[in-house]
Structure formats: C-alpha cells, structure tokens
Image (tube, rainbow, N blue to C red; front, top):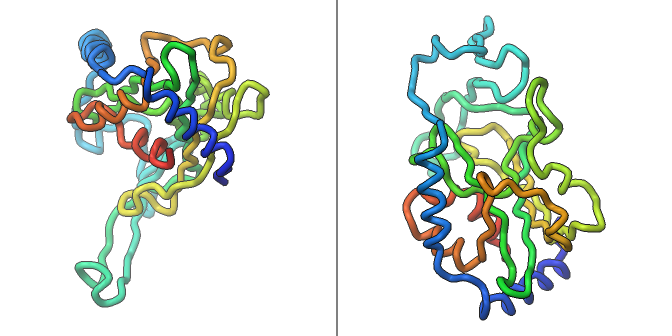
Length: 233
C-alpha cells in the first residue's frame, strides 16, 4: 500500500531539490555509451528447438528443466461484442508463479539534492542491450537467490531496516497481453544514510529526477519500468 504521508514528504524534498539538482544528463549518457561499448554482451535469435535448458511437455507447454522462471502455455479468450477487435482468439502466453520487484533507491545530499540509483541492465531484447533500469529489477526467485546464482544486488534493502524509509509499495499488473495474471511490486525506498550502501559504479549511477525525465525523452535509453516506478512522484 502507498503511504500518502511518505509520498508527500518525498514530493516536498523533490521540490526543494529542483533548485540545486543536476538537470543535464550528458554525463550519464556518455557513461552509458561507454559501458555499451565495453560490456561483453550479445544476443541473437535462434530456433526455439535449439534453446538449451528448456523442454516441451506432452501437452505442448514449454518450461525450464529446473521448473524455475516462466512457462509458455496457451490461453483461449472470449470477449464481449465491441470490447476487443474480435470476439475471441487463442494465443501463447507467459505464466509465472511469482511476480517481481521493481524498486528505486533514492538519497538526498546537500550538494545534489534528491537522486535515484539507476542500474545499467543488459537484457537480450533491448536495443543497445544496456538501458537505465530501477535499482532492483528482478523476479522474487532472483531476490531470494536462484540455485547456482548470486542473490540480486540490494535485495537486503527490501527488508525492514532503520536505514530504509518505504515511500510507497504497490502492485502493478504486468502487460496482460503477454503475461498471465502476473503483477510486480513497484517501490520507492529512501535511504537515510547512503554511505552504508556498497555501490558498484560500473553498473549503477545516481541521477536526479530532472535528468531521468530528460533521458526518458531520448530513444532506447531508459527502460519502461523506471517510468512506472517514478510515476506516483
């Protein structure tokens, strides 16, 4: 649930921040472009039958051999007249038992005002691969720690702490045309003492709300989840 008192408090801090915070995102854009050139990450489309680690069940559904991650199943839709373009259809759809967490950490400093910690996250379907994403953009499986994988960075900030002020936390439905009844928890978390965070500057950068808004106007720089998380502010 959203706590209106905490949202109003952060909105007041953002209002104060406007007079001193950085407005020009040029340094962030230069950094992202340099990372795109330096990070060894590539992706290409391959036939589905060649995808390693995934298997098709007798009923045709596709899932990972470990039972983790999402599955590809079928859905049959019936629609009231006029509600959609046609009265009904069948399609594949992604199913997942757990949703995910989308969280932005923020801080306030005397010299730079309120800033949000963005992650340069690489996803295979991104244009340019790396895009600015929320501090935490992960399934709950990754946050808890997948077998054989490291726990998502900053996952500890989702736990109750005297150093973290929960500004808001609310569930938002994932795109219903692609995902079956999946929702993500959107969060803004204010860090009282950001010096206690261990920030890998090869992956994360602090950005003001003004800089984020400027970057949103550019093509393929800011991932969609940043926009949904900051929308209530």
